Length: 176
Image 1 (spheres, rainbow, N blue to C red):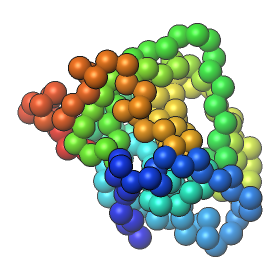
Image 2: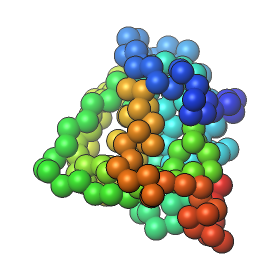
Image 3: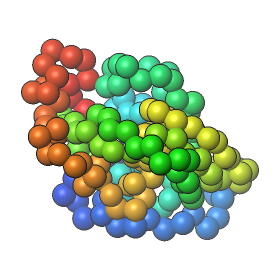
Image 4: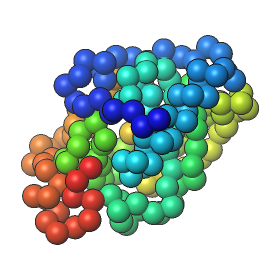
């Protein structure tokens, strides 16, 4: 089922999500189905459970190509429960981001260039990857939602934050 996505200003987006305590439940399976359908319907690169009003540490992300991110490489579709992030190195990169909870806007956000993430698959297997670039950016963005952080809270220069159609006139993905 496609769920409504909470928008910036909703206090539920500012809460720290609870860890998932039990895997393989019908409730977790149903949540993941709803998250997949919602992300696909909105052409998202990722979605966190808090964005649909469920305060659990669950994120999904992945894409082959996406009109909202025309220059980004593919990211394998991933479902991650109780994720943990570990930066690899000191390099931070600035890059444009958008968010389904902040529709129609973009901003330049600093993120770790390389990181290791680990967590559980919905089946309970440990998943660990070392990633960089856009893949690392997407993971950090989604995991921020689990801690009540929206990307505008990380923007260093508000001159690099605005409406997509004003920042990138005539480009696809002007609406998030």
